[in-house]
Image 1 (cartoon, one colour):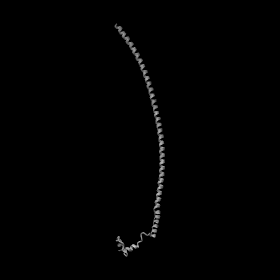
Image 2 (cartoon, one colour):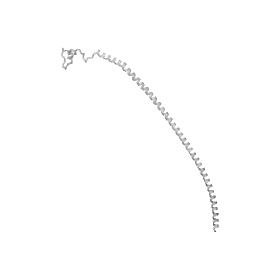
Image 3 (tube, helix red, strand yellow):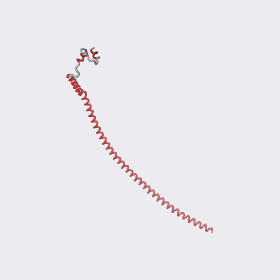
Image 4 (cartoon, helix red, strand yellow):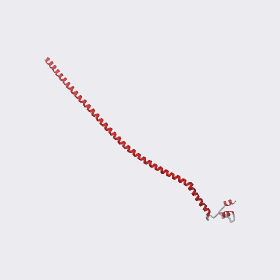
Length: 170
């Protein structure tokens, strides 16, 4: 019943001898600090802080430090790998440049050799053609001379036969 009366409190001031007045009289004054309760709360907060520091914050701090150490180690390994990769790429680039220069020189040498061989074959073919031409010219001159002699012989024979035919007719 006292609880019902306390629950039905209104803005009216409680009666002096009533149950609400008794309950309110038993409650401490809210404006006056209660030193033992205050010390108890402070001790509880300190104990809670120490407990959380040992049980909660210390493992989390350890995990975060391990993570940072691993990240830094990974970053260092990554930097070393990147430096090694860059050095290898430079080495490969220089090798590739040297190989390209060698290939160019080889191609140039092969081209020069092919040009010289082509020129040699052309000179050889020209000399053969010149020799054949000279042989053909000599052959034609010999045939011409023979044909000329044959023609002169025929002309002489024809002239004599004409002369004889004309003499017989006259």
